[in-house]
Length: 178
Image (cartoon, rainbow, N blue to C red; front, side):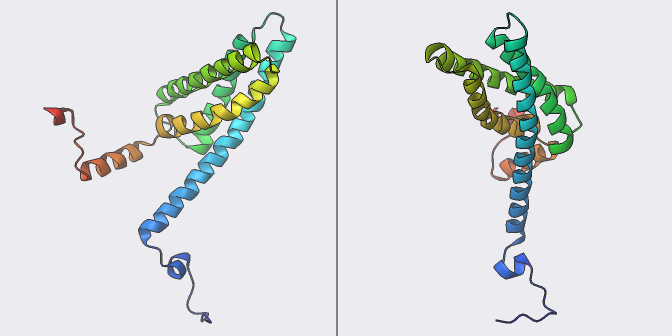
């Protein structure tokens, strides 16, 4: 089937997507971009984390692996918070609240890492750096999910979710249970 030059073919026309489907595609693209940037900034954070951790373990006498993990994770968390809030999620409001939320999510990651050390280093005697690198991957998934849905949620998105729930008949007011 030949197309005339005067009839532009758009994705919506060719596949017959509804505006709702196009919006869904755009949201998907935005989420992939967020995940990519989160991963890229996480890579920067991982380098900071591993560098500070290695310096604490190998260069500073007496640094316990758990203390070195807490220190390295906190430094890396601060770096990635600044990068993600400014360049990825592009939020500038409620910075202290968002930072505290980001730190709380990071604390979950630290707890997971320390637990993995207890299992794989202390109990199974695997090399500490191998476990540290492996733990970063596990913690990445958990932290991305929590940060995207809690720390960096947009006020507009909260309003949108609220409207959708109210449209479905979900009582959202404080007096709903009365």
